[in-house]
Image (cartoon, rainbow, N blue to C red; front, side):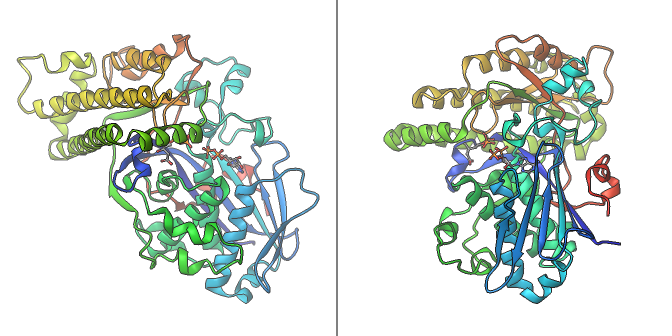
Length: 494
Ligand SMILES: Nc1ncnc2c1ncn2[C@@H]1O[C@H](COP(=O)(O)OP(=O)(O)O)[C@@H](O)[C@H]1O
Ligand SMILES: C[C@@](O)(CCOP(=O)(O)OP(=O)(O)O)CC(=O)O
């Protein structure tokens, strides 16, 4: 029976701190999603020694084979028969096998590679647009329809042509791949991925950040890899200088001295965060799409040229982003202190528009702190939207363009919708909403359904719901192949 290692990692939504989180003086609040990437690493029985085969069965022609040399240094060479390239996969293999060899020694790795490895990579359906699939099934664009699409469903397209939905596919992919390989080579114990802050998890984080930056050709804030590794949290970035040596390396220097969790230059901060109970984060993919690196370049150019004005705006947003995160965390505390009155308050305000929430003179005192805190979240999220629009106007970047403003205003005015905005860099990629999700709702009184109705009938943009919501599970984690619906069916059966 061949040995296999399965690791999954979540996608991400940056609900506050876009652009600011690029600067280590500021933080961002990132929510990890229920949609996850899965990497299955298996000892092969067929492909032969020192060969690694990687398959992504959701895409056409997405199989890549590599030869592995461990001495005198690690070299991963794509087969000439490969019909496409995938630098994210190639660089992940090269760096992870090199690091594992430094940690375990070439002889130990040679034993693992004696029969070759077969790797399968799949992402949850939400990472890729399901518009065509819903249309082929003649289904409306609703959450219920999405649940009828089989897990890891084939896209019918090459990887290069698929429309991604902005959940951070490359970050989740690389994190699950490097973590699964490190565990399969025993370079980190499997237990490392069952502990939120283990040394092994931090090594996997540092390696995934390095590979992701190498593959993308730039050093972003790293919030997406951080969410894939650690789950939802308030994120403060690492100093990018920690990677300069490796990113500019031409001599193949050892990886471990830089990537080791003992290297204090990895000065990122992870602070706990979660969305409050009886709420749901709703995500919509907007087909217009945006080029994030281009938006980032323009905003940072403006910030540098107009530093006094930009610093004022950054500091205002720092205060608002911090207040948003702390108020959301306070709501979880209110729930834990008194879940009954919390649930009663949520049910009451889920049938009212936000402006009506604090207008009730007969509000039961035990529910008042919950209602006023949700109203505070509503007000803060609207203020953040206003500041992000101002950032866009001043830097002449469509951060919350008018079509997104109109869509968000229509959603946020609905009964039971707390707030929302454009995630991350903004633009036309997506929107996020925080919607009340009481234990029970009268028919057609569900805030979720009210939002779906807005999305279905909005014509200025091509809006399609994502099934993803927040996941309270940890980030990267070891999985059991048979506990994930549909996963064994897409793996080469040994
Ligand atoms: N299922 C998959 N299997 C293999 N590679 C994938 C898969 N999904 C995404 N990728 C890789 O991730 C890249 C997308 O990275 P990027 O453009 O940064 O998008 P994102 O912002 O979603 O991470 C693709 O070009 C591909 O190389
Ligand atoms: C601007 C940013 O702070 C946030 C970008 O968030 P997005 O979620 O928009 O990113 P993409 O998935 O690459 O589109 C840049 C950064 O933090 O790296």
